[in-house]
Length: 300
Image 1 (cartoon, rainbow, N blue to C red):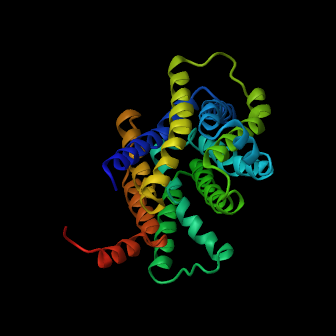
Image 2: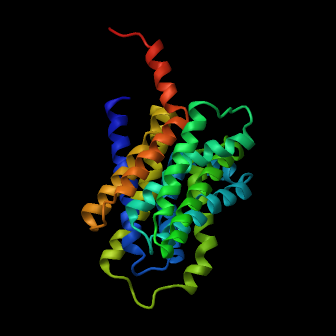
Image 3: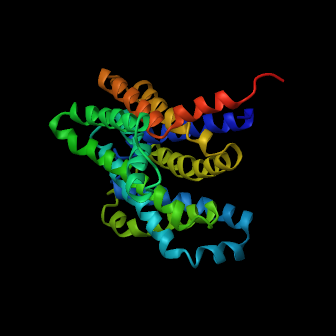
């Protein structure tokens, strides 16, 4: 990985890791549906000029129009539903814990591939990875007080939604430009949440701290985050870009402990280790690295 792509990876991890902290700040004064509607709407408004500038208005419309229904579905399953679920959960559990549980999304992707991509065999180390990873999720959910179990399950559900969306997106809009997919899907998700956001609008204007956190989520976590991620995918490849899965929950845990005063529990650390070990094994990242080391020549 080049130095440029490494810096992009670290910047993206820092931005997405902070998203969990910013959500925690925002839900103190904003209902989850209002927060997510504003976040996605502002993010879409910021992405739209960039998408049109890069692709041209005609190409943007030509690609978006025939795929509109599929892009709406992606907006709901990949943005509106899981982010509302996550935001609601963060009204009850720590931001770092939410990030660790959500890191299980690749495990759900591997599990769903058993049914929808039957050529993918899950056995040996991959099967062990799924068992270890979901064991970590079960630990994190199980140690929660009775009042917080539902919130932990809500984060698990959001991870499942991301996995479903990833598999569906890869098939449904493979020929649509990523910027078109992101812009239209975010717009559709924001519009779908608008009625709920209006009903649950705050009684007074939020504090400036919450407004700053909302802008950080919208412009940083959504707009800049999408651009960085797609640039990283194009330049460094998917196998290296997936490293973001390991960096985000660890950074989110650090942010929560140092900036919000959240407790660093043994269960959270053990759960993080189990989930990430499960992802590494369950998605064959470990074995892929071993094979590359065996065939890559050493020396100048």
